[in-house]
Length: 150
Image 1 (cartoon, rainbow, N blue to C red):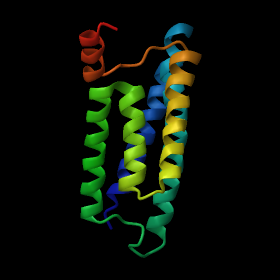
Image 2 (spheres, rainbow, N blue to C red):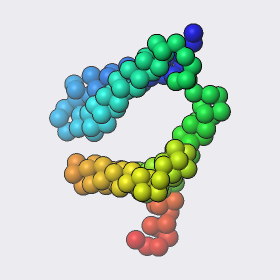
Image 3 (cartoon, rainbow, N blue to C red):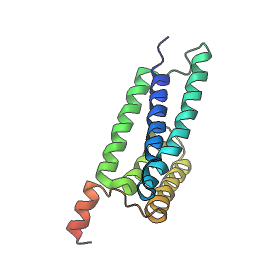
Image 4 (cartoon, one colour):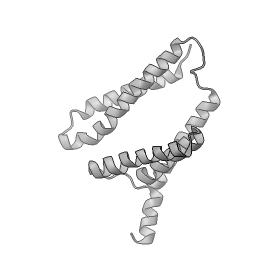
């Protein structure tokens, strides 16, 4: 049985573990951002590998995503990337989280807005303010800032 979901999960796990291993050799000032992203991502990848492994051992195909579901997921991923490219990590990322949770995952507005709030706290509060790392502001955001003279 071919399990593309498990293959992707294992590949992402290897990528994130490799990123953390490489970043751990960087000087202290340079390793903060890769480790901030890499360690939680590796933990999530471990969880996803475990989830996909269990779905495959069950013997049924209930855990497998349909081709339509995979296409929808890929389309949402592209939309997420475009939102970040246009609005930056803070504005575009938060908007993408809220819209994906509400319309793709069909969560309630309350849950979607809570997801946006968590994204805001992590991105603006944790990374930009807490760690002092500026995030990409986005093409449209930069254009608007220049046009408005901000």
